[in-house]
Amino acid sequence: MPDQKHFDMIDANVGGVIIGDKALHVRNHYRYAYDLSEEWRKMTGLPFAFAVWAYYPGQVSSQFLSKMNDAMRWGVNHLEACAERWAAAYKVSLQEATRYLTQSLDFRFDASKHKAVELYYQALVKLSAPAPQLFNQ
Image 1 (tube, rainbow, N blue to C red):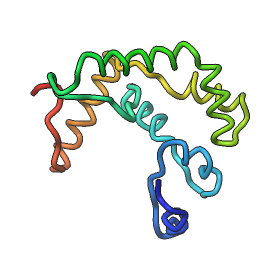
Image 2 (cartoon, rainbow, N blue to C red):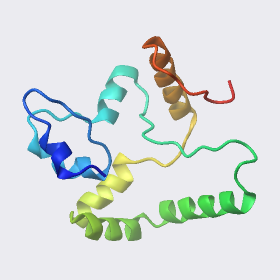
Image 3 (cartoon, rainbow, N blue to C red):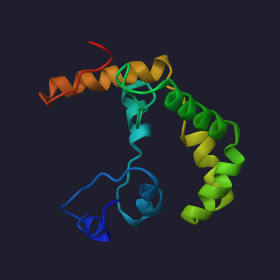
Image 4 (cartoon, one colour):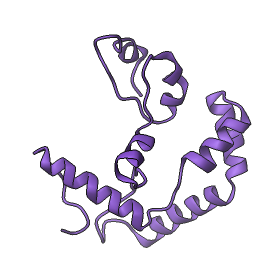
């Protein structure tokens, strides 16, 4: 996580992108703050995939994959317990933590998120940015 000095650099002439849990704490400290997910949805009508856990076939053992799937399933099925831990860890209300985990995040990588990632990839290519190989292309 960046030091406070990185956040102090953001001022009237310097912008920055702050993502993750830290963004929840600092969003009200700046004159302009935009929710990337909300802006992406306005532009595309698609959800925003902030992160995707991915691996090359054969690089992850079936036992490890099973443990990861079990951990995600447990978290999704115990959002209340997760919200309690999250609220305590980030010093926010249980109500805010619950709303964040149940309304702001979606842990499924479904067809609409797949399409969103492909659209983002296409935009990256148009900008001539080095783009990684996606989806076994």
